[in-house]
Image 1 (tube, helix red, strand yellow):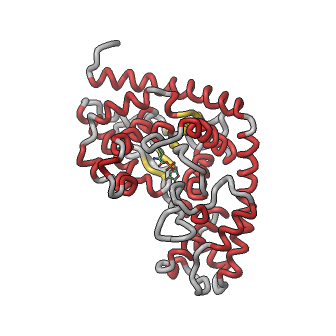
Image 2 (tube, rainbow, N blue to C red):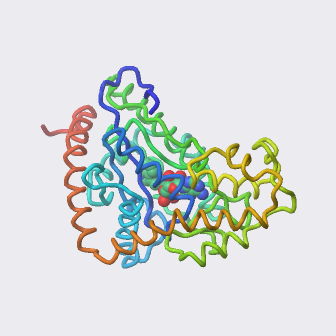
Length: 344
Ligand code: TYM
């Protein structure tokens, strides 16, 4: 892990991240986030939550929200998060998140939020009808991170801007309340081949839960046939694969599929191209499908196993929430004192 950059911060390294329970998890979530969570749990104290407070910034069917919260927890476990090592919990079960978010709403500036691209993308032309929560979403995200004084935040590329905003909020809080180094300035861990997986139908868009076309993404719940079929039908071009990643620059579909192969196999794009240079997609796609099925099949199966025992998932989430509160509550108490609220 890289050194965190708040010179006055003297606390331990901590990892924190989360995923919204808003639909099927896809390959982008898996490679951009879950794989990194699993690796990083061995590098520092790790907090991984289900971002249900963030989920309701857009309408969620209540019963579905509960089921999907368990499903995300099952995916965490299936991807290899170990509840004995990492703290896994539902965000809404630790009410300190919402309370700190309010205080940060009063630290963050409207101008900062106006620059957030996710709000622009999600609210689209209908900004007036978007929830206020969707607008202040990144402030809640800053609260998630700083409540645990997290120093490293594993995320996909699309979340980098939110972690940068978190740094701005941390720095302004430390300055305004004369508490140098109180909050660390967290680092987004967004680099690497899996950080930006694109749609299989249109490589100018990222793979996302909200794309209306299921063929655009590989879901963690897809069976082997569905995975192979989606890869077979993925949009490509007619040229053979080149020798170097530089030559993929103007070939977004090819770049995406090579990136997926590399991320699944734990290799660089250059290494993958060394193996496939000169071959066409007719040869490459079946290899990619085999690899995807081999890597994702066991995760899908493990996820089904965990989902078959919701009581066990609930036990893990409840124990995680209790542990998370042990860290969150003292931070919020100190923050309230720094702000000058009445009380101990
Ligand atoms: P969510 O649920 O939208 O996405 C979860 C994670 O998956 C990553 N991701 C991708 N990575 C690579 N390629 C893609 N196509 C792709 N699509 C999604 C996201 O970058 C993310 O890491 N705001 C967060 C949830 C959150 C959070 C936090 C994260 C709430 N509080 C605090 C970190 C720290 C989100 O959008 O999740």
